[in-house]
Amino acid sequence: MAAPAHDLSGNLQVREFLGFLKFRPKEEYWQLIDGVAVMMDSPTLVHQIIALNLVSLLEASFVRKGLNCLALHEIGVRIPGVAKFLPRPDVAIIPEVLVDEVYSNRFLLVKEVLSASNTKRLIAHKLRHYKRHPENLYCLVIDSKRPWMEVHPRSRNWEPVRLDERGDILELPEFGLHCTLGDLYRRTPIDLDRSAKQGRPRSR
Image (cartoon, rainbow, N blue to C red; front, side, top):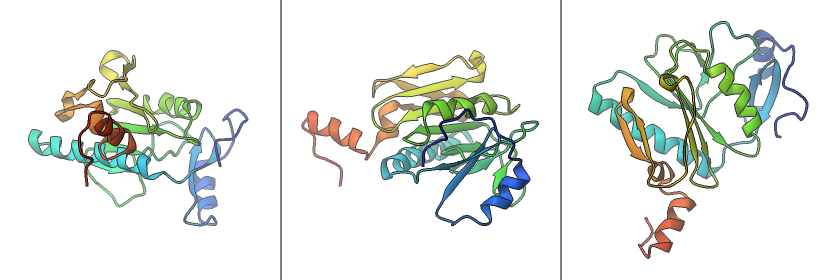
């Protein structure tokens, strides 16, 4: 099920949403966006590979830089002072684990992957709130169908930077990350298509 066609402005509160989830099948994937419960499609294999590629790259960069951070896949987050909003970004960086919770109150970066249900319109709603978190440094949006990414850095007053070539550099100096856009598509059909065009053997 995709995001609802009507404007995302509902009255569902966090407590009501969490109560609603208790009666839904566990295989369903819901998020609370501006007071509206939105059921998302299950992430495709490519979607998951892209997210896990970023997690792997970030974890390696944390070790090199000596950071006590965690890059997590599909963690829920909360934004202080923002009601009726409980999203689950595809990737989030949190500084540490303080309590055993489903939704983290702290995060330093979030990444969303474009999909049939996680549309540009829906992501725009999420970005508006993500940018209000006082500790968040970056919002990333990446396409799973083609090499394309937007980087929204707090240091540039959230002005987006677009990457659309595999060789374009993604640099997040606070986390020690320096990689190419193509690195995020490793072992996906986009990466394999590049290898085939260049006459290189495909990864096994």
